[in-house]
Image (cartoon, rainbow, N blue to C red; front, side, top):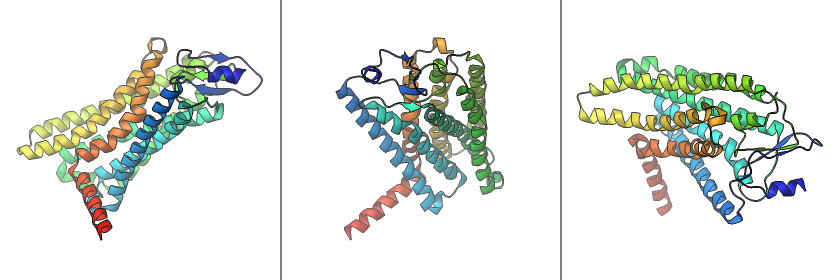
Amino acid sequence: MESQALEGGDMSTPDTIHLNQSGPTEFVFRMFTSSPKIQTLLFCFFLFLYVMIICGNTAIIWAVYMHISLHTPMYFFLSNLSFLEICYTSTLVPLMLSNTIGARKPISLAGCATQMFFFATLGSTDCFLLTVMAYDRYVAICHPLQYTLIITPQLCTQMVAGSLGLALFLSLPLTSLVFTLPFCGHLLEINHFFCDIPPVLHLACADTRVPQAVLYVISILVLTAPFLLICISYVFITITILHIPSAEGRQRAFSTCSSHLTVVLLQYGCGSLVYFQPPSTTPADEDWHLALVYTFVTPLLNPIIYTLRNKDVKNVLKKAMSKKAASENL
């Protein structure tokens, strides 16, 4: 009877708690809709976006790896960002797709904790890497003569590894803190489509002020501090660009920076709206919409922006496609 009740649920009944203590705690995710036709449409739409994200970001990684002209720090960071986007979306989307259509599938406490840990780690690494990319652009534009001396291959590797290490350092204790809380009930509904921290905290049957405070502090370190550093970098970059005498040089510099800034504003803007609002004042549907942006839109825009607005990557992909077409015609 319990499973039947869950399968019949929809978006209009969030945060349903089934107080059956006969087994270990498990979670189910809130349904997008109970209509089978709309479920099928959403499944196909989300699957299409996921495939596009995988293909687009894989194309960037392949282009950077295969073509020596792209073996520069800027494209090294870009290929790492693309790899992160693939891992990040793969942490969330396959499970989301499996719950979009048909009956909802429970996820265990350990499974939810694992998804939360990887989501927090990869999302934080993404934010730190965007800061590293801003620093790379700052040195390239403001100190072009010292660029190769400052941004060495060793430093590039260290900054990427440091971004991942710092993200692990922040995500592991936060996830552990959340899942040391008691959850009362056997089958709990998460008012979201993945194990995000705020909706999971909402289900805990204990005082959540300490983990909520820790979440705010970590959000400042992951979102606010990097965003301020990026803003400072771009202030100096803008000043330097305005002093470039060549109009073509100014346009090229602005084009490179605007691509990065577009991704930055989406990533940090949506993240800040979700994690800095008090739980009582944040509508659940608003969190859903924002989460869809940084789950699908940002990872999809990354390859689109950096290929359509970047002549080097465009030329490499065009040459590869031309070679493939020529070989097929032989």
